[in-house]
Image (cartoon, rainbow, N blue to C red):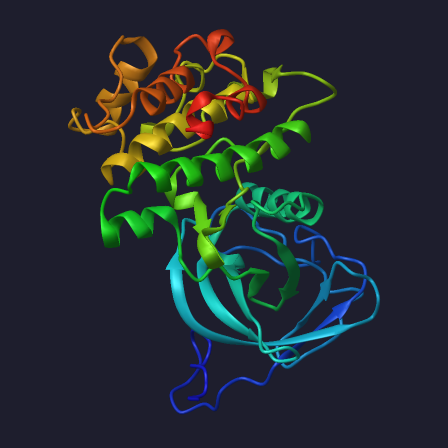
Length: 332
């Protein structure tokens, strides 16, 4: 087996990096300020202080277990790129398992983005479910924050659609149920994902789906179903609920709308509002119009009914994830 490529920025000819040890101990906060650290140009981004970290060749990290076990890993090739960093495949040297390593460079993000990443880590630590991507550890270096997560070899649902085109209804139904089960768990734990779409649903082994990318997730206080904090626009326009675009109070049911749009995406292999030339026109229609995306004619009436129940513009008329799990479509 060929050696994994050197990490980004390594000089040509450098040998493959030695495995970094990841010690099981208390987790450092990614936003813990390091004295004197600053971001070049316009404001400072605090870098994490590496206390309670087992040192490696370029830093160290900790696992959530707290039993002192060290996890050593090597970086492989880049398999994806997002707004705040890149995702690499990694190798757990201890076990031979593959990992996903989300690498964020401190110089390329703002304080607010780093705080969102910290929230994502904290959420992933406590949200353990079959249909939510599993968090493993963080590895902090002088320049990067590496988040080690479960590796999903199928990539995202969006990647699947780009490669193979629209999915058959039986597959759409199976995928939708898994996403719903993950959403129901999130909502039971007072979390609103706020960016459900094909690109944020990962495909693991044997067609198992995992909800990922919790950087935009909102935590509701107490038993509230909506919150004043939920007035800001978060998400991706073509999948965004009307109440989000209008900056009204919103909560868990915004995810239900986005799920309906994701079903449209899976059925067409396109974003849900193909009739509009740009996202601003689509947002105007979502917020104040009356039309909905067209579903392919070959889909069953039960599938169409499920989608249009998700796409009720009045959020109070929209079913909860728990209720949708009982929809007749899933017993077809």
